[in-house]
View 1 (cartoon, rainbow, N blue to C red):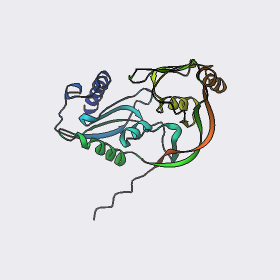
View 2 (cartoon, rainbow, N blue to C red):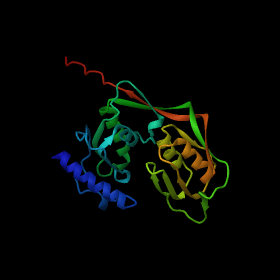
View 3 (cartoon, rainbow, N blue to C red):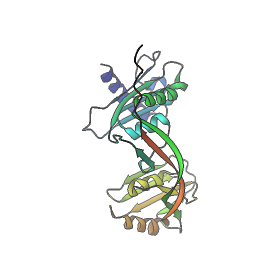
View 4 (tube, rainbow, N blue to C red):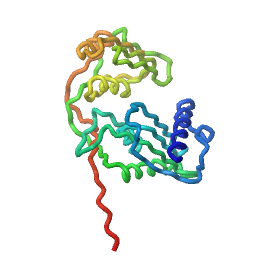
Length: 253
């Protein structure tokens, strides 16, 4: 019963958080807020690839349905974890998915993050550590002005973009070069990308390339947007996900 209720609550909360800028008391499921709850279980829905996450930090609520391990860790630890910046050690099931619920309770929203992390550390068979390490990465720079990349004056909206790597398309309005575009390139290249364009403000970017052709992507960046990718060594943050097995409990005396 609790799982069914939590799943329904998750769907409602996820829709509420997407539809509103914040998560006020009238935008989350009606459940007993005076009682804190915290649990996480392996998802049995192994055939389903989609997942739902609802982080209502102001209300002290974290909900997840069929969430991949890395996304669970990113939520619990507060890290901006990307797969190409992760190093695994030990026998870790990277395809594992989880359902979870964390509710800090009335007047305890500020403690929810710590509660969620404590739950993850106590329940998951892994530990996460971050370290600054020198690695070979792709470095993105701007070399020329091209029509595909134009500055937008007077706009202050959040970035809006359409990213369709299977179609070889990327189109963005009010794009800020604050890591968003570099992360999309990481998704395509499956390697770390560091943004060293030095571009500030808002930009309109439009790219078209042959899907699956890395050289075509590089040419599109260069010829359509005046951007270049080159290999270089940089110090970046690497997340070490280490297998962890809790020591057996001491026998009762």
